[in-house]
Image (cartoon, rainbow, N blue to C red):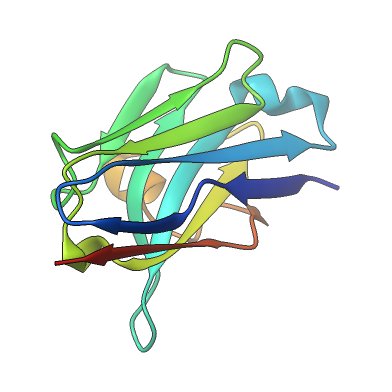
Length: 130
């Protein structure tokens, strides 16, 4: 069973930065997993923010965060990060990490969709004030 643990959320002013972390345990095949970050505000669907498919070394981003957010992973590939710069009030949400071990080939749309992932973290709150 895969367990994901997030950290790094908090409150910042607009224009500030935060770096979220997600650490995985429980499956040694994580080196080639697809890894992603999603966010959700009350009353809205969970949306994909950034994803990284380790098997093909490719990253994907939602248009709303391109140029501001960066997804990366450590050398062991069991921890991945979401560096968030130039934060805006509309980035306020609960952020979740997600993963899929041994992913199939995916389009950008699939990589940023919730359906493909079968492991989820508990969420970490990000609040951006104006």
